[in-house]
Image (cartoon, rainbow, N blue to C red):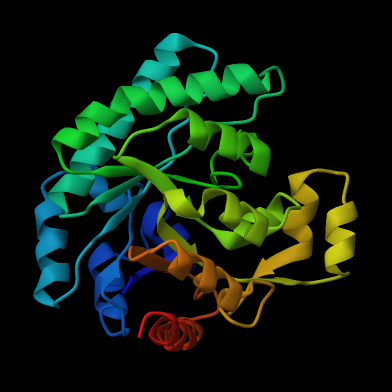
Length: 294
């Protein structure tokens, strides 16, 4: 049966930018939930001090939870080779961070979709950088997971591999037992595409999942499909919502994951409207997981 984790979606500004929340405070909030683990973020301000890494691991494990997944955002599609080497070095440090926290999965991304970048060149650059990190990850027992992502908060351009066809080309290019997919159904809507179609194309490579949901603030799903202004338009039309009450069909998602034998981590990206909302999302997912993996 899969395991359930939570990510501090509502507290990223406080944990990563202004420091108004301490990581220990997030831990104490999260461990009250009916979850098995806490997904980590490499950009928590306090993670800059490596002496904090074992302390946070102990605090989580003292509550009977674990830190299975690390969320980070390398930019592997920059045209400058020196820049890419620095991103590889950062990714290796994040792998070390994951290992120190007791985790098994560390996210990678493709990089930014720079206007001058061709599809073939972008896939090659991203694949080469991911493959450069894989031996380092393998030595530490870490699986690198690529997410069908939208855009890092600090990037100028959206994700290079945001669109389904590009994402699948990149996933197909990197064939390694220590590399898999972190599937996020909501991000597919941001690309104007069908999350179930993407899942069917990559389900045999999915090792972790982000559980989230989106709802339309205005218009219809057909309006979303007709958008021509790019990803920025999708973001304005879509908003995060409580899991089970948005656009995602979790029965169809879990049916497909069960079919391929998925038993990895499902991490909740929710709670932007408070811990009560996050608790309801946990309860929804627990019911669904118990149904599909009794």
